[in-house]
Length: 354
Image (cartoon, rainbow, N blue to C red; front, side):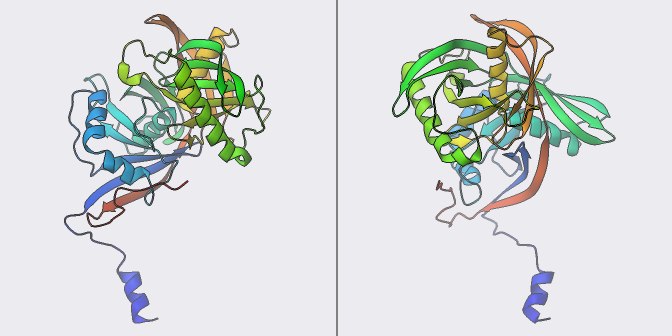
């Protein structure tokens, strides 16, 4: 054995310089969709609510969002979150969500993942059966229910914020695609839902169409944003924007009801069926009388992972009759990281190549 190789075996810990920022994360995935949970090292965010923290982060530390989401530490489809104090004493904690474009209002796959992590890390007193968390997201309070059996997490379901339909069977002209029919709904974020069975496309909802899904999904999003004036949250202006396009098609697995592929932010492709997107779909199916209380719908993703959606109740929400959706899925831990940021690194704030 050479002296150099002996040193390799003996010296496996790197000590960063004192002026380097160190940020620790626990990385996870829900149905294949990544989540980088920032657990320490991020500068303190100031404010009195999750929306305050989000604004402060955007105004003061957006370069750290890009450093952690973009290459070389992340990639164009990376997703992350920062855990924060709740809005009041009745909550357990708050969370803001990070991605390649900025900060989203709601993220169901992240709720499933951090609820799993809260149990795995014993951040709460864990018991076999149902473990309840109240999580304050930018869109409002989310209640999650983590099922534990023999000390092991077997799944998470959550009740989303009131979700509602803005309009059904709207039309928009999209360059290169012509006139399309879409539904506009909110499930913690606004989406344009495009049913492949009502429109004609030359691509499908499989990984083979990955590039086409991005380009056409973004084209539809831009066209809807230009035309549709209904993207207004009834109570919070910070939530009033179109987050993405969701394509709906036939399920590939006969055990499932249908398939979701969500193109969101700046062309990210959700590997999961999209928790907020499924929430909005529950409102659509209730409005169309295709789904009633107690009935469940299994929705698969581009990776063939599955979320189960259902409707818990109805509620008046401003001018809308909204539903409280329930979404269920599973998450896994993939690794632990200590990211360092060298102030002299010319690429310290990250970059994206797609």
